[in-house]
Length: 396
Image (cartoon, rainbow, N blue to C red; front, side, top):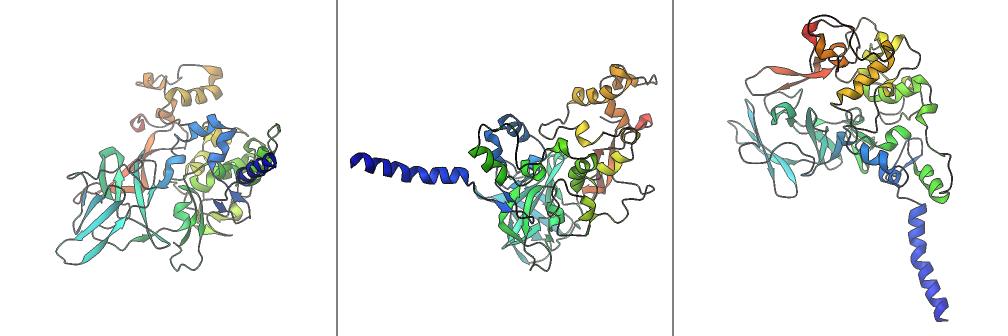
């Protein structure tokens, strides 16, 4: 009887454990009915890829605000954004972070706004979002990495403006999934319980509940089931995967919302730009890498080149000159190690092809005002229009 009782107790305790293991928690449910279970579930079988992906700008492009990922300073003297008609002071109570607003020459009191979400990895800067119940807004203070300072968020005036509603089209390039609530007049209401931060595994490979459950139940299985194999997609499908965020604002929604598209589908059935098809239109270097790449001769003269030809989305590659130089040499001059350009200054090209052929270029879409009296300055972003440029455009 004692043995039977002990067996029964053990079974009862482990039923829950096994049930949780074979039925992972659903973090969100996509419009197509498939369930997200979070990238941590991928770590069991893909630990190396998971760990390197944690270091990428993609993964760190959106997160809950805390002391580990807010780049701006909250120290006295470095925590102020002083504009012509308004002053913002960033303060922390140790656990939470707030933007305090003082409108100059007025006694109006504005409640402090909490830092709830960080947008941007901090490579060039960050913006911050705040919740008002289930409505999401952008704070007026942003962080600019090159000057290590608080700046006015792009597009905001130098006076106090009403908080800017953040819609799904703004979020889609910084988080994996957000469930919209249709009753919002501003389109900025979300189900806070169904928001997955950063661009993680399931943004590209699709909601993975079925995949995880199958392989937990069948650990001996070698062939991957219930997940998208990127290499099996057509070239355009692979390009669409990146183009959902890297082909301009895509502000014309044809079906669903900004998170409705799923990898492997035809992106043009969901969203498009107003005049992105015009070959005469000048594309901005911020956010339209796809459009610039597809206008490049490197792209036009091969049937296989796509974004992953040069980029490994699972690894942090920024600043790895040798890696990208190797990608260029792999396709040009049969592995030649020296640049064929004999012009003055070509010595800097022998180990950095992209400095010449993909120079950093001022963005006209992404600009920031550094001080209250200064003009807006552009972010310098590397162009994906691969070509031959004048020497004065060469930038590191």
